[in-house]
Every structure is written in structure tokens, then in C-alpha cells.
Length: 60
Image 1: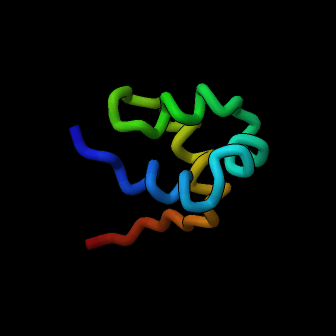
Image 2: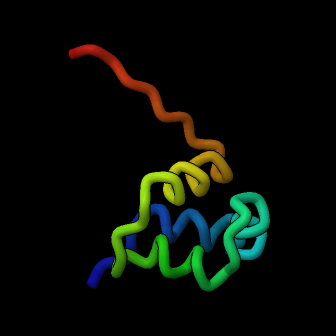
Image 3: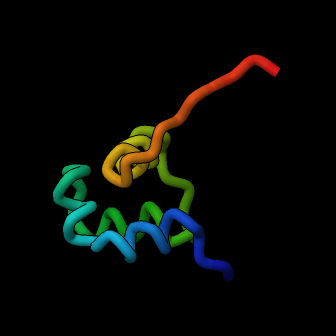
């Protein structure tokens, strides 16, 4: 039962702060990133945006 990288980043940046930015409550945020569930893409996108991640695609 490993801890996901995104969970560690959320904890490092503050669960309350990330929850506020994403519009999720703390409990929902924990459930989404704890590695035990499969969150929807919209939730992951909100968390990534709150953490200032940029997602780009590239043709191989």
C-alpha cells in the first residue's frame, strides 16, 4: 500500500490550502489522492492546477 506522489505533494503544500483552491473539502481531497481510490480526471486536473503542474502533450 504505497503513498502516491501527488498525495505527498498535497500534504507538503497543505491539504487545507489545496482543498480551498480546488473547491473540494478536505475529506474528498484525501480520498481522491490517497492511492486507494480512482478519482475522476476533473479532480486530478484541479489538484494538478492547484499545485501549478503543467500537462503538455507531444507527438512521438
